[in-house]
Length: 417
Image 1: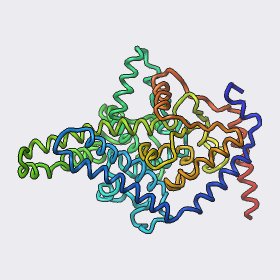
Image 2: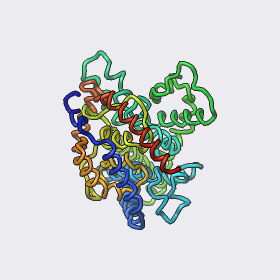
Image 3: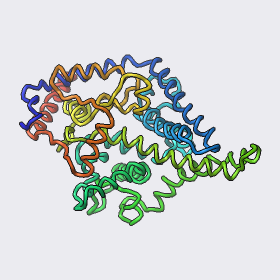
């Protein structure tokens, strides 16, 4: 065993898996009205940011407006849409027609616009994130595997300063440049699989699709025109140019302003907020599973098996946590270990569960990483530019645990007969 892996020698795999599984059942059973009330509170905070930003964006370019617009966009995605699309509230929320993973943001353009309007299509993100990422974490088929996606940059023979410049560009543009086209690719792949159609010969489905690759005709799943008309342009036009239209009229009735000036001031605020929300979300999203202390895996595992629970700890990191204001600024992505163990719980449940998960990991000697988000940003950038690499989980132990999963599953099946 390499340095840092010694804990595996005496690790009680089955005992750890059983305790985590039982805790998940307990947390799920305890969800109720308090979780819905907490969701409504977070929606109010997020909507207040939207109100401040939208009602002030035509008067002057200023940091308060930009911050509020950015925070609304970020939290609507990472907190409200994220946990709703995972099914975190569908068992306890009284409004089943909206707060369900099978309803929220999907089905019609109106649902997308009203529930969660962003660069990514909700149904595409549901496939890419909820399915592919969560159940292939840190495997080669994980679409969000930073080390794999940045392989070209890591291997590039150029001064490292140019690599840092590329990372800086990515931080400011990643949602529309990478995430929207790549989630749409995963949606197209899922449809091919459902239809029983083979992936075109020579196509590597794990490779990311970006705006650049789509523009150059290198996407085998859709055309650049389709990406623009279906995914990107609706948000670009409505968010940046239609939303500020009321200021054209308002400016003609306010002394010292003109409609044109207010309209273009609002647009400037929206574009600056776009840069900030990309940067903010990059810091709290991309850093969740990258670093030289995070493990990679060779083979898939059964969902909610012992290997599954263990991998969520070893390939995820938590940030500062514990209070609603702190968690709000982190977009509630500071509980990645707990969230990946049980994706369909509420935000409040993750807040409750973190100390208990940490205690179980300490009991069994499992490395539980919780660090400041900016330190994790540094570690992530090191991976992106090739200054560091992720750890590979020892292959013999990976195979052993997968075999134990099969035996446990067979024994449980035999008991149920």
